[in-house]
Image (cartoon, rainbow, N blue to C red; front, side):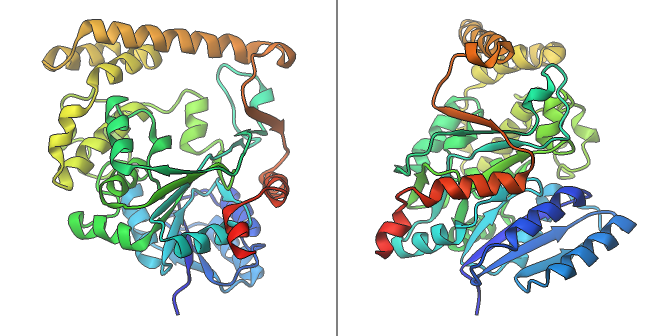
Length: 392
């Protein structure tokens, strides 16, 4: 009998994080779930040590799959979904984690016929992260929105249109498999149409776009259930060190056809904004929805790149001149707002904590991710959650 929930973790050469995360996941008591490790690491002594440590956990719910071929991150993620059996799937990275009641959320989704459930994800910065411009006070930092337990219904089509209008910047309002839970039935529709669950350039955006096209009932709940980790050797860690950019052709984790099929309206370099924009372009094209690309706000994308990736301004200017759908006035308008927001954040982050302008965010230093899960579990124990209400 297949489990209700699959937690999938595609990974490559980062056992130092994965081992800790697995030890936490093994404490989840629910038996009707599986933990799928899809490993594309190099064969090494570290892998053998890791396998011994997994065997000591003695947890039959952990399913380990290894492929020593050179795979893109999309191919490895596809294998993770294909090797999973759950009715619902949750995708996390090897430096992320979940709270111990995630199974309850999946069971509630089944009862309420929910296709996709997303969360207000807290972020946790592992202690090995090194910031180029910020001090050590940001390592070991857990940040999250004060949770209310409120459930919000999201229109996936409207979420996609907002994403396009934002130049692909804000994935957080999209239906998500990465850091979310999605129905396998809907995921299979993406696969049937494109031959992949991730038919673009990077898995998080690929599947978010796909789900927005095929999902029905999508909910977002204001609880800190999935923890978005940032470790030194993750994409987030590279971003903190200002190393999350480069030549698209030299990024080995990307699909092999990424450079050859790159959208010519997107500046040709690897960064968060550019790779997400190209991913949106590919997903819409490969699902037969390329007409929606007319709604993509290139003006906002170019403004974002001018402000946050100024070392590539020459390339951004080159592409801007070739795109006849742009407006310099709009770019200046968006750029001004982005510059002011960046300046505010820069100043606010460097003030002593008692002088910082606060919002509804909670920030607390915690030494390790195990303690983070314990802390968040404690918060949710005293909350009124929808699956608890329905079970009374």
